[in-house]
Length: 478
Ligand code: BG6
Image 1 (cartoon, rainbow, N blue to C red):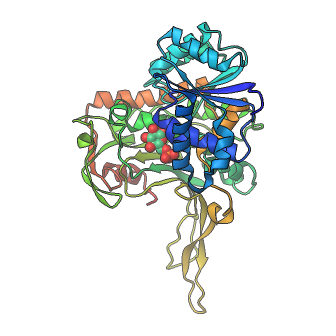
Image 2: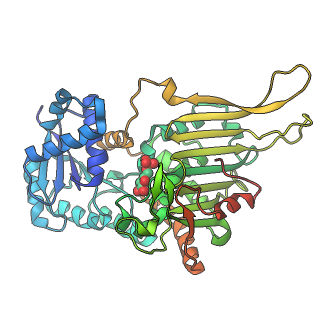
Image 3: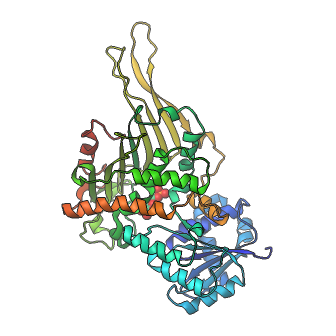
């Protein structure tokens, strides 16, 4: 390789995220010629390991995830730039190992893929070892805290070492192609903008449905639950992108200022009994077989943590006054599907007697496939009668761009962070505003004192979720 002049250092270098996402993403980027050739990649974990042994592991992880895209020729181009450093986050002396491996490289990106409880110690130790200079940046994974207070503590501990402009809070949803495309749909077309408000839109639904259970993360998940694991970050980010005003440009602050305004306009949820639903899956049928309930998953026990949440959010501003935004996410739901549904208003008066007119609906599917569909009322061919039915104008992005490989969201985000571009990362005030809104809901639940309602694995959550929308004369898109 050419002499390394910059480095990406991954703390938690043998952890789950590193194995499943980070190293496969780095391999993919390098295989496509997108990773700087002078980039050294250092994985940090506690035990000592040779660079060769660590390189073998990385090769296995990348190979397992990248399938046909993985070739030994491409892998060998990256392998020589991978190093290992034995680091104990809480042992300042161990940072000398990292210093040795970096050998004076100043342009560094530190990726903290560890429990947030280590963030403070890692940053302090990097600073004490003289490794966090003006050319250093840090990427941190969620969860940034469990509530506003703990989020602030984490942010303060990051700020003692890094300037805010050098802190990259990752939300992998912002790296998804379809989420990016939402910006294009809204701001590269004139068609929707005049309609994108309370005059034409009756309600918005944001659903992130998963078929998986908590997998092997029971201990982690039980501390957070669906509201902290998914709503505080991924769902609120999607809501911001749907609801925000057009930014002046795509500069980090232009976009993030607009998102913060949305978060600050969210009406605090005061009536959790009416505006929210909490659920926890019980045994049922999912992914083609019978599955255990949450409490009896490996490592589990009886618990009041929710695995399903539905919320009616309201944005108190001129554009969205009176338009409910329904947010819904859960594990062990019938299908894996993330979508945003923009439900337009009904025609003010129908001239088509005998026909039921369905209001137009724009559905933006983020996964499993990326699709944009607009339903319109159409006439069915017939000489005698005027019979109408809804038909879809469908745009399938995977069919249109057949040759484009579906990228891991982390590929984009790693690249952006390496180039110091922070538009797709969460700013401090944004994370804190999101927690403020979530905290009010959680404290409402505490006061209410009711456990989450049980729902059978493989169903769409507790029946109260249906009532949540029906109360306003709406229904979920299923
Ligand atoms: C993570 C959550 O942030 O997002 C997981 O911690 C969840 O619980 C995952 O499964 C969903 O991500 P994706 O990209 O599969 O929709």
